[in-house]
Image 1 (cartoon, rainbow, N blue to C red):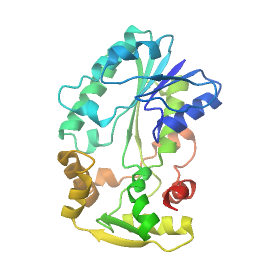
Image 2 (image 1 turned 90 degrees about the vertical axis):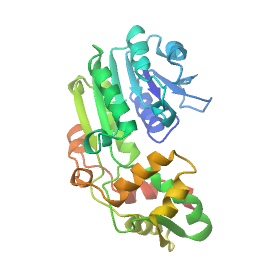
Image 3 (image 1 turned 90 degrees about the horizontal axis):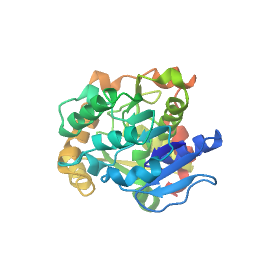
Length: 279
């Protein structure tokens, strides 16, 4: 049995599907009841209450651990999840971390994530750590404006980073859960190329077969919009990366190729698969 947390999201959903297709018994965990593939067990649970994971972890051999934003808040104790997994007999944990623990290690959320990585390393369990950069699926922030106004509004229109398709993260996670050779692996996950917001708008236009206009926001405008859905500190951190990526954040990592034996998917591939969200 393999337990997947965050099982209804952009990474968890394709990971659950891939594991089920590979013939694995899978328990999908999410906060609310949700549809899952045939043959997959679903257990609603709140990761903020690790003891509530006990029914999901019973009989599990491996755990994919994806933390939601509230588990980085003051007072949260995500390390207890690893303790609960060990107590339940789980042997392997694959942790979704972030590239920021390497490139910008001093922000509060990244300090907390680095501490969780250390807890996992010291747990006595088999482990692998995935550190993606920006996600292609962040383009869904633009879905409504593209549908209603045919416009992408974003700051730093000509500053890019090598964003990754969440489906690639899911495939790497599946490999790490299933293959012994990835035990102790730490993988930085990026897309195949640096791509700017303006170029993403062009890719969306290509997928739609209709024009999409690009409108450049100021940093303050973007911060105001982002602060409606995330803490202001995280909005500022995100804008720092988007506006002035470091050389490490611009680097195209070879790790997807190393794990999967193929190059990561370009943004245009993600746009074509998700075009319905923008129509």
